[in-house]
Picture 1 (cartoon, rainbow, N blue to C red):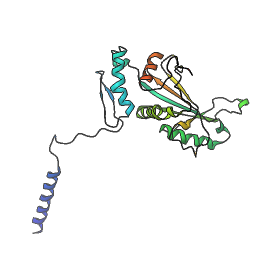
Picture 2 (cartoon, one colour; picture 1 turned 90 degrees about the horizontal axis):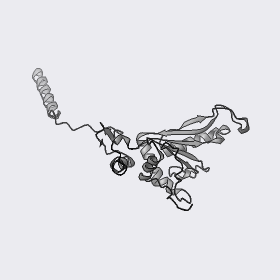
Picture 3 (tube, rainbow, N blue to C red; picture 1 turned 120 degrees about the horizontal axis):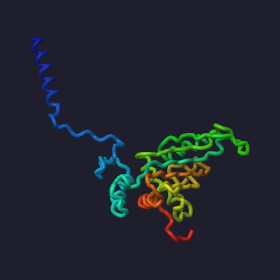
Picture 4 (cartoon, rainbow, N blue to C red; picture 1 turned 180 degrees about the horizontal axis):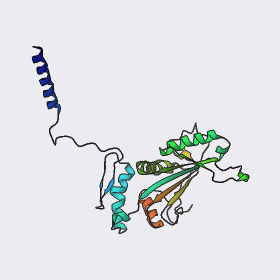
Length: 236
């Protein structure tokens, strides 16, 4: 009798497994991994996107790229200028005397960029500035991928309009190879920074590295993305 009950129990377990197992070919497609977004496929000019794509990345793919190809005659999609990286630098001169200032600045820059900054140290000693080689004097963050697009979105949409007496960004910051340098006097323009815990305003240098071959294409890329440059002939 015990053997018959054991066989019956085994048969019931097998039937339950067969009911739970999906039929071949009926399985739902696997969800895309986070970050697998907006990939250029094979040079055909088409893109693959997932719902997690940053807003500005979608804007670039669906609006900016077709506009460049139409208005500027970029027949090859790979010739359309794109952002390669954004580099954010912050100087912390008082760090050589007060290391806590460096820690605070690092935490604030991490909140602004969403990435842990790299400590930059002096390359040589300068006695007039009481600077010795190896002393920490600044911070740097290099943004690529989704973090780069999200930072660009927050910079243009939220931070830049909060600049005091803002009348447009100076378009003379290009380096001749399509890269643009932007100087920010106060990092308090970013809403991520708590003013009560950050009494001292620190300056930032933001470099937009693009694949453009010249300043004109670099300017067109940033301008079409919404960077609020000063209009030609506008009084300062």
